[in-house]
Image (cartoon, rainbow, N blue to C red):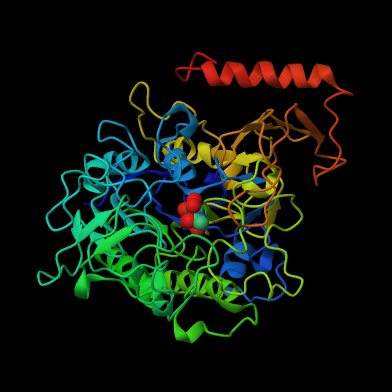
Amino acid sequence: MKRTIPILSLLPMVAPNITHAIEPVKKPNVIIIYADDLGYGDLECYGAKNVKTPNVNQLAKEGIRFTNAHAVAATSTPSRYSLLTGEYAWRKPDTDVAAGNAGMIIRPTQYTMADMFKSAGYATGAFGKWHLGLGDKTGEQDWNAPLPASLGDLGFDYHYIMAATGDRVPCVFIENGQVANYDPSAPIEVSYVRNFEGEPTGRVNPELLYNQKSSHGHDMAIVNGIGRIGFMKGGGKALWKDENIADSITSHAIDFIKQHQDEPFFMYFATNDVHVPRFPHERFKGVTGMGPRGDAIAQFDWCVGELMKTLKELKLDKNTLIILSSDNGAVVDDGYSDQAEELLNGHQPSGPWRGNKYSAFEGGTAIPAIVHWPNGVKGGKTSDVLMSQIDWMASLGELIQAKFPKGSAIDSRNRLGNLLGTDDTHRPWVIEQAANKTLSLRTIDWKYIDPHDGPKMIPWGPKIETGNHPTPQLYNMQADAGEQKNLAEEHPEKVFEFQTLLRKIRNQTDKTAF
Ligand code: NG6
Ligand code: CA
């Protein structure tokens, strides 16, 4: 199905770039490349020194590189939930880091970004890390049969995904609601409560962790010589090999592009890189000198290059809008002995920001964001506009002139001009959610962090500051971007202003209420 609409109604802001403004053009394809745990400082074009990322650099050079963009949360599940629904995850219970046997968190009745594209005539596909639950009920999935609820119910025509994360069972791909390459000789069982009789675990049999040892946790099921979170039995030929995950999702994504080259498509390409366990393919082993974490960044860059190559071959590169970003800030040691810490050699995964993944400080949600669209975006720009991924749904909706059902995407604002580089006004405020659910409110000048009791450092292993403080924190982001000097006592009026605003936002129930 090939849809054409007049360029003037579709793209008023970019019309000047196009010589024959009234000629109908094909709607742009849209690809969201969503890396996992890729920090603000992890790409060469964001200052990384010890890893080369030529393909991402090229996108940045020809597109817009954003230096003040935020994921909605400092962990995966809430960030992804918010990106794909346009609703803050903290409005909804059970949106914290999901187990691999969580029931599907976004319900089929909810309007998703995929629904939005589908209703505008796009073919829609999801690839790679999902981490938003599958099936009707937590713990009750039968992994040996088609799942009763999956991404097909959320607007995706096709999906080839990992149920949760690389470090969580089940370690199999799910293709259109069923285990891909299902092996009937090895029925799959999954539990997050108890082990299955006769199955080794990382805790009892550490000698079987031949590919990577754990540094904390990750001591339950052993798959491919790597300890995981959760217990699992069976899988046989369907079990993934960690070293092939990037190849696998990339080749499926390329097939999808080829199949849909004649119609507009939306692709959610969510990589497993650079989440733990970092176990890239042999081809990337040692290419960075930073060990598996650095090599996984190189592998991520390779995936980007493969997608670009395909788009170019099919002559789709000019009219494909690519947004490249990450689900949360960087983490170094996240539970496996992969020498990530020892081999940094001066590399700063979070760039200039304080804190990392999980944290209420900026390093939790400050992420790279690059927009590339030769037909619609003037390249070579760096933008410091304050931006949140929460707005991408409404902004892309504006681009394709989608209609939003009442009550959908309530937190998402149309800021298409920011994304396309035609409007550099800052979002008035951005909300950030830490792993412990602390909310912060960031404006271009200030950062307010809600009080939260608890330890200063993450208690379970990674050397990361939580951002916890029993009283409010207020930082002047212009003078003190590193969040060092708490000015809350000096500026009680600002604290009051931001607390009031945060309360209003918390209580908001629809788009128009506030
Ligand atoms: C933590 C895991 C960590 C990672 C994280 C979720 C342990 C010790 N740590 O609980 O390895 O999986 O959850 O990461 O199990 S996220 O990027 O998917 O949110
Ligand atoms: Ca993540």
